[in-house]
Amino acid sequence: MTKQKLTSIKPSGKREESFFELVYEVARQIPKGRVTSYGAIAAVLGTRLSARMVGWAMNGAGRARPKVPAHRVVNRVGLLSGKHHFKPTGLMEKLLKKEGIKVKDDKIVNFKEVFWDPAKELI
Image (cartoon, rainbow, N blue to C red; front, top):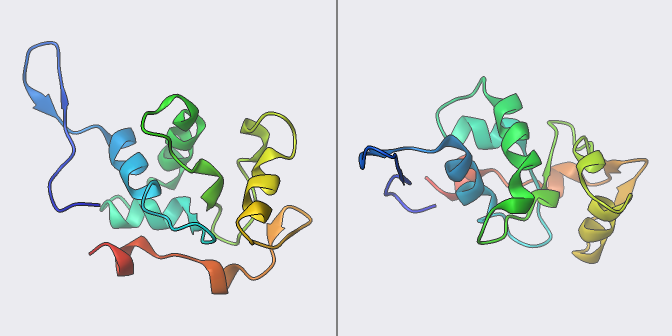
């Protein structure tokens, strides 16, 4: 994520930050073969208690351009909690496995090793 703030233009012509766009910008930085959590994204954006809002943003990530690798965002213990939003069934796990991430019973096997902390990487 760059140091500049992401903004959108309101109908009035004024600029305002878009939380979802900020979430997407962080998610786009997650390297292939790595994952992060909703809470880690919220924390790096300065809204530590907004992990659920990050989840809502990820639900809409399929419509965002440029593309957002939403499959790389999981819950705080590595569960594929957003898997139901990927169609067809099993797509989230398939995409993760394609990047070399091991998944068993809807959970990242080596979560601590593949966890990418945006607070350490982007700030």
